[in-house]
Image 1 (tube, rainbow, N blue to C red):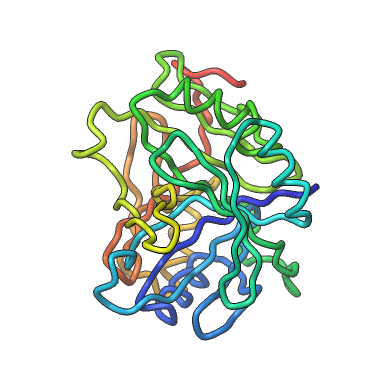
Image 2: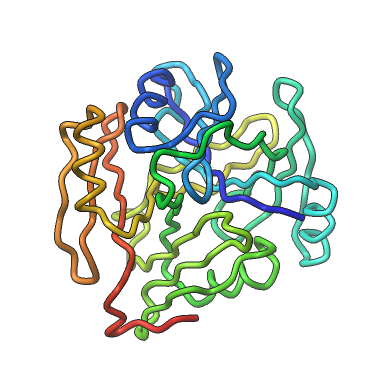
Length: 260
């Protein structure tokens, strides 16, 4: 079973967001009026059109795609998660419960790119904020997302990133002491199911953000800039809906961190 990290970005500006993602180095895989999928070097990003003013506009939610929905649902149920099936526009989806005030969604694997992404080293890395990083990490690796393995963790317990096997992207988990003061935008409750999806930050990783900065500016992202963080350098750009999106530099100095 192949699983790929593929968060969903809900947006009322789907054409502009698609152009922004391409300028960042992603390659289109699926394109319809309301649903698009773009590939990074590892991981993918889905765009879902919503009307302006919709509570979901500008929200990113945690989702994956897989080549075997039945097998993934079986694994989720074996891990004790509640699951439900539905269809949207004829597309089958499986949702699973999480401890993060929402569900995680899984859809069918999108076709592979005809051409490799321009930025083959760009990695999709949605970031979950939580008061308890170790507990969240344990949930993901114990069956929350089959195939995820710890890659880098902070010694103080405030950060973990997990890598999907087979080059399926990353998931980052970041500590916050106040989810109301430092959350991503909260996904609204779906009135049909009475549930909500898990909201995450839309973010990426790249091994050389300075070189990436030159290329994305040449591609039209004039607002992009690189900022020094304690752990590495980070490229920051603004999505068409006004949200800041971070591309973290690959962590080279592991002082205060460990692998695994």
